[in-house]
Length: 222
Image (cartoon, rainbow, N blue to C red; front, side):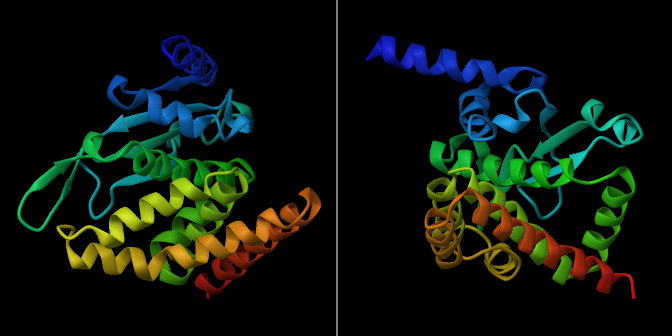
C-alpha cells in the first residue's frame, strides 16, 4: 500500500509544473489539477490570504500578466486560511480532503473559462461579475460545468453538502451559496446529463452554458 501511495503521489507531482502551492494543501491541489490536464503547464499560484471578504476562495488572472500572450498569463487562486463559524473559526486545512479538492476544482473551472477569453473579454468579465448577480450565477454555473465535465462531480457534491449541511457556518453564507451556485441536485443532474453524452455533445452543453454567460454579460452593460 505504501508503494502504491508513493506511485500515485509521484504521478500527481507531474501536475506541479508552473504551480506555486502551499505544502499543507499540496496533495489536495494536485489531485484537483490532475482532472485538468489542459492546465498542466498553466502558471497558477495558490495563495493563502485573509483579504478575501465573504468568500473562501477566488480565482483571478494576475493583472500584470493580462497584456502578455495568453500562454504567458499567470492566474492566482486566493484561499482564506480560515472561515468564520457562528461562534469560532475553522482552519481551511482541517476540512475533509474531498471538500478541499471540490473547492479547488471549482476554482480551476473558472481558470478554464478564463483561458478561453481574450484580455478585453476578461476585463468585461470582471466588470460584469462586479455589477450583476445574474452574471455571477451564470459564471459560477460555467465553472461548475467545467468541473463536472472533468470528472469532479463527486468532489463538488462533497463541497456543496459540507457548506449547506454545516451547522456552524453562518446562515448568510449558506444563503449566498444557495442563491448563486448550483445546488447539489443541479450537480447530480448535470453529471447525469454529461455522462450520457458523447464528447461532441459535452462540448455543445458547455458552449450553451458559456453563451448564457455572454448574454448575461451583455445585459449587465445596459
